[in-house]
Amino acid sequence: MKERAHPSGVPWRNFYGRFRGKALNKTQEGRLGMQLEGLSPGPVDWRENPERHPLDLKKLFGGKEVWLEIGFGAGEYIVHQAKRNPDIGFLGCEPYLNGVAMLVGKIEKAALTNIAIYPGDVRHLFDVLPEQSVSRVFLLYPDPWPKKRHHRRRFVTPDHLKPLSRVMEYGSIFRIATDIKDYVRQTLEQVPQWGFETVDEPPQMLRKSWPDWVSTRYEKKALREGRTPYYLTFRRSTEATAKLV
Ligand SMILES: C[S@@+](CC[C@H](N)C(=O)[O-])C[C@H]1O[C@@H](n2cnc3c(N)ncnc32)[C@H](O)[C@@H]1O
Image (cartoon, rainbow, N blue to C red):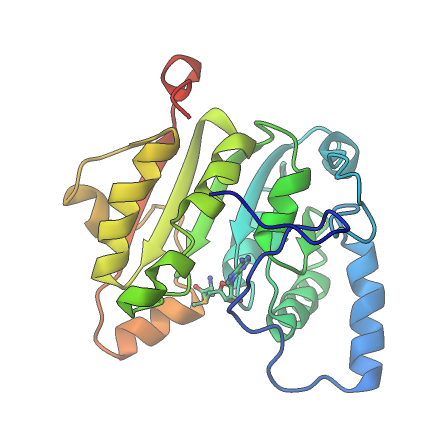
């Protein structure tokens, strides 16, 4: 899909989610701004990086492998993974500022040094991630957009999957969890079109959570409300098959 652009070159990207919930007071916002500077992966926003120079991930994480969580919510999953995997560099992306503040608190409490945060829309982050730079991606309980006319806002659409595919290493793993059956349908239809293959065939792939899984806030809510979680695992195809993209 061709993106419309502002005369300045900034692409026009509709974002339908929330940037804020309960207001942070001035002190909290000022403090968060300073903390985020220390956790920044480098210049991502168009204002700071209009030329869209790629991020220097080697410098950021000292050459460690990089894993990305898209829409980390309150951050419990990325913190769990970062504690288990001190030799991995984690990138977390989340536009909802109250969630970002929660993750910052958790990072401080656990004294973690292997997480960087981009507090915005992942599509801006994709622009500046080098090609094949990420070796694992987590998309956990993405916004469901249940109405049919809103399905094109879902993450599993070309607008997101094409740049995701570019930044993932061949052979790397993309995990998705959702409690929405129709999201499973769209995922199985769309993701393989962008250079990914399924790791197991459904229904096995849908039923088992991963061995290193920890339930997220949204999963707990889904379970409380009687919905079934589905877990999908894809592998970024190797060079030969990925030429299709
Ligand atoms: C339903 S919540 C799930 C949060 C968390 N992963 C969990 O399982 O508890 C979906 C999250 O995706 C975030 N999100 C939506 N669009 C996004 C985008 N374009 N880039 C990054 N995150 C996004 C939302 O702000 C929201 O926090």
